[in-house]
Image 1 (tube, rainbow, N blue to C red):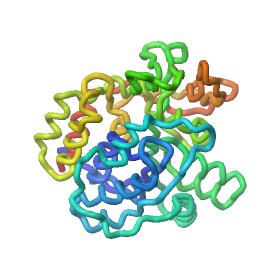
Image 2 (image 1 turned 60 degrees about the vertical axis):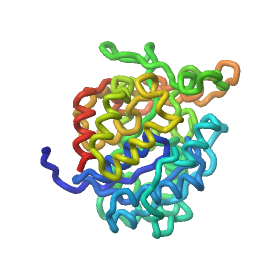
Image 3 (image 1 turned 135 degrees about the horizontal axis):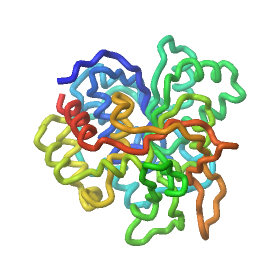
Image 4 (image 1 turned 90 degrees about the vertical axis):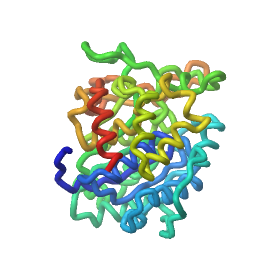
Length: 343
């Protein structure tokens, strides 16, 4: 068993997709992590109201009175720009938490405004916090935008956010450094058999709010971007699902039900990767991935006939320096994840 030194304070921003549950439960079980709040965005997979309820009730899986008191806050109802959304069937499944059961209803009330919660949190913080962004970037995009006219908040964010670890984006082959594999977008792949977007170059977390992502990139906060280039090297396989089943604790039983639900099981071993849980693992164990520091920006322009909005561009003139995870040690990732989720 690995020795851990507590505690890294972590705020999670989520759209409550199936892989978000994998990521959040890993951090909630990690002995070196203290999750100090969860903000939910309605600009990703889940709709906002059921998403907030689901994340609050997810905390009952931990059988820990302290976990029930972790603040869960209602975030953005719309992206900062455009109106890109997941397919309706995917959103319905996320709203219904993939028909997997929570043990009970969390009695702790949720918070009505993520922006107010985050502003108060960072201004009053005495200990720096790491942020995990595993949904569309609307909540933190709006927070950083508002900080431009709020000097107190701007100073608090710069002082009290240690790093943002963000699952999102992909470097196309033409932008990928030598020695690393390029990654196409995943909009088309996850909308089969009838894609309704023309975009072939973006990744979903960036695509749903391209301006929100750019606001985060330009925030001046150190960022580790866990891109599809790395996550595609860690597929969710039948063997991984079988290992989750064998652990047999409340969290893994829930995860197994999600992974074998009618919406998710068809993608196992095909197009579903360790998207958000890889970002969570990188937050605690950065050595699991190889990173490159690159100047990146997010394409903002929308062209519905040949859409490239959300494309991640290496741009020495206008880009912002980010550490980009471009490859991953798959066996080490699986082992790291399973060690913690079994605790």
